[in-house]
Amino acid sequence: MKRKYLLYGFLLLIVIFIWRTCTYKTKEKYILPNGYKGFFGVIYQANPNLEKLKDGNYRLYKISPQGVYESGYRFAKGTLHQEFYYQNGEKISSFGFQMLSYLKNEEIYELRTNQTKTFGILVKGDFINGGENSVDIYFVGTGAEILKLLSKSEKLFFSLGDYDRHLEEEKNSLIYYIQRLNQEYKAKMPPFD
Image (cartoon, rainbow, N blue to C red; front, side, top):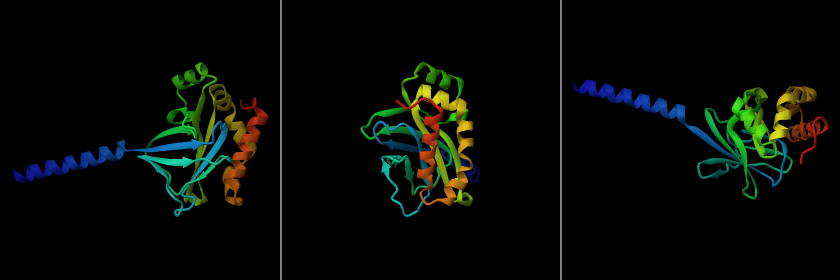
């Protein structure tokens, strides 16, 4: 009888462990320069010796005016909760952790009905340097700008070529790549507000 209760207790611990592992959310806050619009990028594990900033339970990423943040954190696996803010504390709307190419109908509807509201969204993520680092590219803009980006993003990225090559060949390549993305976007789409 004692063995039976030990077995049930052990199974319960396994179920709790699996549930906790599957429901854990990494929380992230991105702090952008006031009024920033356009693309920005985060390179994860750029240097493991970099300071890992926190705000309570949130990983904190302070984006530079050039649109780049080099993080000491490893890329977060599992479900994420992301929030975007300007330095003055103004919150930028987002869809949690949703990529541009996977927007649902209700999210597209929200962009259409809030075309002047500012949103932040993940556009592209990839592993570089043989999988040692991860780079995420985000976009902050109005609902109208994000809708235009949604229809043109493949052409925009294609026009820049292989961004893995850009990131691995140049010292400040993420800054260069973000600048190029913003230049291409402004050339092919209406200017930012």
